[in-house]
Image 1: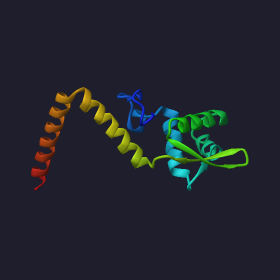
Image 2: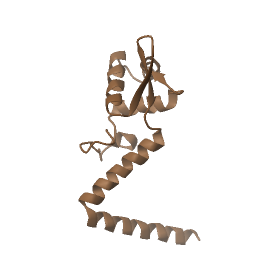
Image 3: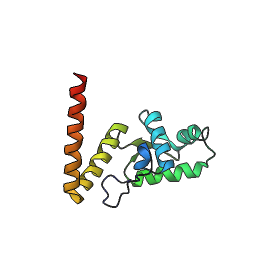
Image 4: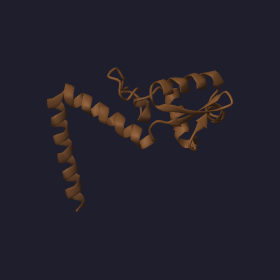
Length: 133
C-alpha cells in the first residue's frame, strides 16, 4: 500500500496489517521492523523468513524492491552488492498513517454515515466508561 496513493487498496476481509499490505509484504515488513538495527539486508530477511516458509531469495529481494518503490522501505547503503534497507515508517507510524488515510476516505465519501458511526461509537464508549465507575 502506498500511503500517499489515491489508488491504494484496503482489504476488508484480511486481519491486522494484511488489510493494508499483501501477505508476503506484511511478513517482510514485520521482519524489517524486528531486524533493522538500523538497517537490514535482503539476506537477513530471507534467512529469517525461510525458517517459516519455503521461499526463494529472489522473491524476497523483488518484494523488498517493490516495498521500496511504494515508499515503505528506504535503500540507505550498500554492503558489497547488497542494498541495506531501513523502514520509512516505524510500525506504529505506518498503522496510524494507514488508519488515518482510510478514515479520511470514508469521511469524505460517506460523510453522513461516518458522522453517524462516530457519534454512536462515542456514545457507546461513554456508556462503557459510566459502567466502570
